[in-house]
Length: 90
Image 1 (cartoon, one colour):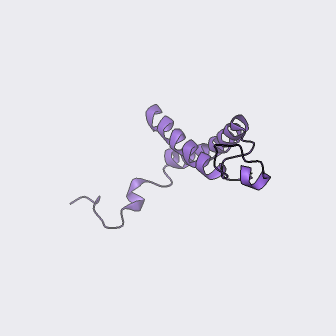
Image 2: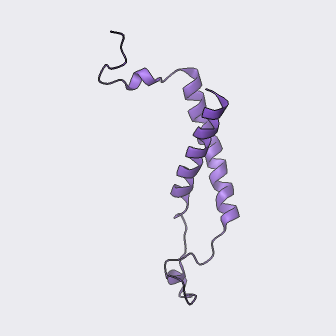
Image 3: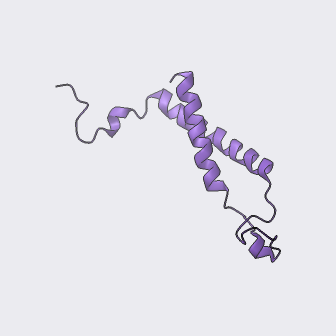
């Protein structure tokens, strides 16, 4: 795996993890009955971006490490997903 592939894999994993983690323990302004004028009731009441990014980064490092280990070890390869036989030599 090249360095570019590793960085792209990390970025994709980070953003997927971010979208999974964002709604966890989310308290909206509607839940708190403290809606700021001009905002939607579904807006976060007390959003902590720094804490969320730290949690996402920690989870991503673990997931990326597992993904990297599986890819570089060769346990699973692209040919394992060739269900229609299109990659076999002719």
